[in-house]
Image 1 (cartoon, helix red, strand yellow):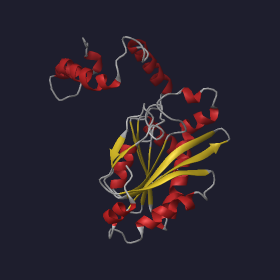
Image 2 (cartoon, helix red, strand yellow; image 1 turned 30 degrees about the horizontal axis):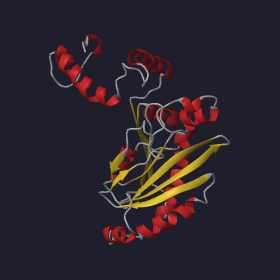
Image 3 (cartoon, helix red, strand yellow; image 1 turned 30 degrees about the vertical axis):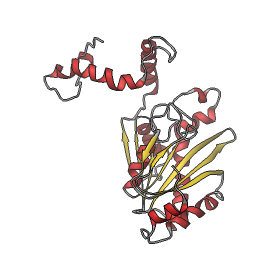
Image 4 (tube, rainbow, N blue to C red; image 1 turned 90 degrees about the vertical axis):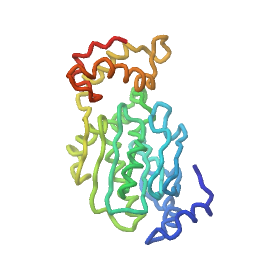
Length: 277
């Protein structure tokens, strides 16, 4: 969504202790001076805006197609070169109610999707928030084939690069460095959190690493097992994700939720659930 300049000015007038709008307009030229960066666009986003992301910003396989932003933010999107054959696409969301804190979001699954919902949530709490596409677009691992530098971005480099550049952008925009730095991620994001602590302990003062997907060999074996059951997307027996998340999810709960004697929307031990579709 792109509002006309006069509408943005009216919505944002009188909310800031510095010229938020002018600072956002001048940010692109400043960030363009940083090494290895190419600015894609900047956008002044008033609170309450529903941002709908085009395919080049949120691949069709990604879950976040749109988000409602709860804080006035300056949004900047850019590419950062990580090697001669790789780059990440990242965004920095800079809220007007900045608390001095910086936060990096993580990724999920095969990790080519910026977690826009996490960025909206954390920027609403006053964090200068960054997120990246982990070096490729979408939830497929096809980009890794014969591309070790792209794989390196996925393994560790994207988050660190995102953090280093994101902190520089934050200081450029607000005119002062952050006071504390944090990380928030789950699944692949949890793994990224552990890897960051291991390899780049100075990046964060605190890390929330949920359900870390560290055992990659067993995880991918598990995915392959289910692929044999569900088939490819063009298979006549293929079941799309929305059906799994709604109809099948509810059907499993109806059959197995009460196995442990408590109907609480949790299947306590999936091994005891003999689901009959």
